Amino acid sequence: MLVSDLNMRYLDGFRKGLSVLAYPLQMAAASPADFVRNASDYFASLVRLQIENKDLKARQLRGAERLLRLDQLEQENRHLRALLEARDKQSARSVVAEIMYTAKDPFSRKVILDKGAQAGIEAGQAVVDDVGVIGQITRVFPMQSELTLLTDKDQAIPVMIVRTGMRAVLFGSGNGLMELRYLAANADVQAGDKVVTSGLDGVFLAGLPVATVARVERDQAQAFARIPCLPAAGVEQFSHVLVLGHRESLPPRPPEAEPVTGKSGKGRKARAPKE
Amino acid sequence: MQPTHSSRRILLPVRMWFVYTTLFIALFLNYVPTGHLPAVPDVVALVLAFWCVREPDKIGIGAGFVFGLLTDIGVGAALGQHAFAYVLLTYAANELSRRVLWFTPVEQALHVLPLLFMSQVVMVAVRLLAGAEFPGWWMFFGSFVGALLWIPLHYVLLLPQFQPMDRDENRPI
Image (tube, rainbow over all chains, first blue to last red; front, side):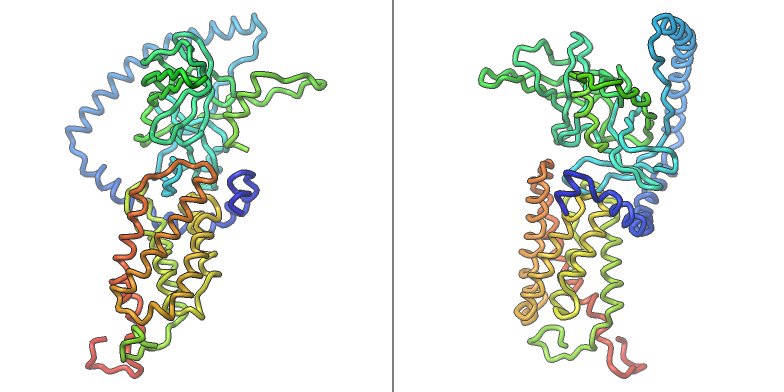
């Protein structure tokens, strides 16, 4: 039973069925937490709200200016892409959701969002906050969904190092950090390098900030360098998040058995939790 | 039945609906999203162990399995993780029942501590085998808190059975 759940996900239907039973109890149990949160919101001081309001207004103003330019750039981009006959990057249909609570399972880093299948969320979608990527939806229930954070052990995401353009795969290492694995010991990586999504998996949009390289440990005895990274987004502290729609529909099947190489190999790894 | 075998007090027989109600209340308490707070006791394990010790011929591994599955669903654990641990726990509690009931509540708590601890060790072993991260040693603290809770729980859960057969208006309980 354990094996078939963890490795093969045969029991998801069963889990969904039982979760319908457990849901009212869960909701009731979550209400004290909600109450505590709402009460603290309610008693938040006026001053703090005013400051936040001012800050947000300033940010919106700054954003508006960029948005205006973005419109124009998007137009230009569309023209250029049409010229190149490249496929349009679809602007993803996204859903704003709120994080209700952290899942109690101490072995993993998952949080529960307040929107589920009824809001059009599907397993495998990417989730971002205002700074960068925080994770991926792994399970969807009718009214809730489960978000696996990037820092969850072995949660993988294909990335690119901005400074060098080098592609790599970033894994959660479990202790609130992430790790760039399988980079050669002499790879050109420095502490402080920004890491963004490479978009090779077809799940995450390219160029979303993911992490910053914390330090690089090169060990002569090992073929790969050990590169722990700090998440860019507030991966473990946030309240509102954006669930991005699927970036693109799957490409049409190739006409005949053409060897599909390299690219899809990486993508499959990052999409593993979806299956 | 007696509160303990060494006591001379005789209790009313247990009502099964009360057993299941307390189990569901415990399940509810387990669902309260405490996040990754350290030392949160597993209340369902505790209440299950209690009824398995008190009523070994009425509650057993079947209830352990069902409530384990419900806990798994609610806390987002691997399906079967709690069910497996609770089945072992309830079996051990049933087996120990005849011995444990001779002791006072405090001594019973000392017997229950290794049971709770074992169920946590089983869960950690299962998840580590499946490749999860180790949650840290503070997690095991929960079973110590659970064992401490045994002492008040012992009185609370037996309260309905302390009632006299014929209701006396002048008697408080």
